[in-house]
Length: 289
Image (tube, rainbow, N blue to C red; front, side, top):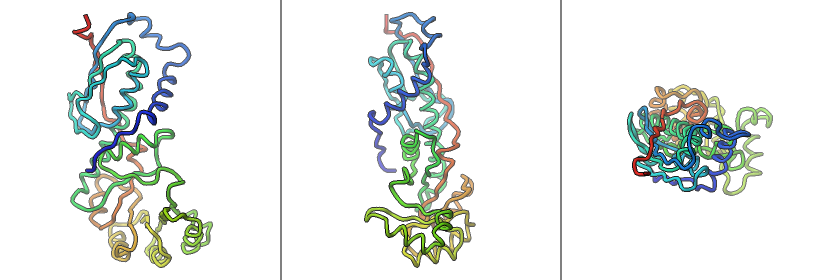
């Protein structure tokens, strides 16, 4: 797996700041303010409750450090690490009030992104015996696309488009409005910059043949059987990148990859992966006195 390049805090801070403000509301943390004395120092440990892959530690760190810049955050299992129940992922030391106030925001990001990374890793491992790669889609949580796609990379997957502006993807409705596959590709080719790839979604082998004749860069083979996918790969014969999509599960990913496609697009990686259960255990800092 290629090295994981973390996202800069400059990109992450607005997301974390907005989440903290949502939680603090109009009066701040009423419970913590009532119970925790000012100046109290505590230590927390982020602990995995189940097996999975860690992702999102930078956002968790920011959730505490935006509340208390002096908070110390020591990572034991960096993003991309495989963890099991009881694994200590990171330790945090600093103002107890900030630990409690930032806890939910930190865990929301960390559990969510670790869940995406864990789901991606499970598919990547299932197809590791083939050259195929698992990729995500634009079916992301509004506002969290950059970090959810980061979590896919952490899990060993690849990213599809980040938005409507970094590649052309001609889907069935575009084809219908254009009057056909050839017409849609001609219109797209006339507007595409020299660095813009054009992908076209096909539902049938006849559409695939038409797309290949028109010179498409990537074909999205939508909801095809394994037998159809294998035939599509044979017809493409390396002239375009092949991507399978539609109702892919962990169980079916292996057969789809073995059909010879280059990519397998899975929307549920980012729209409905379960979280990875991670908790924050807090106690008084034994060295604070």
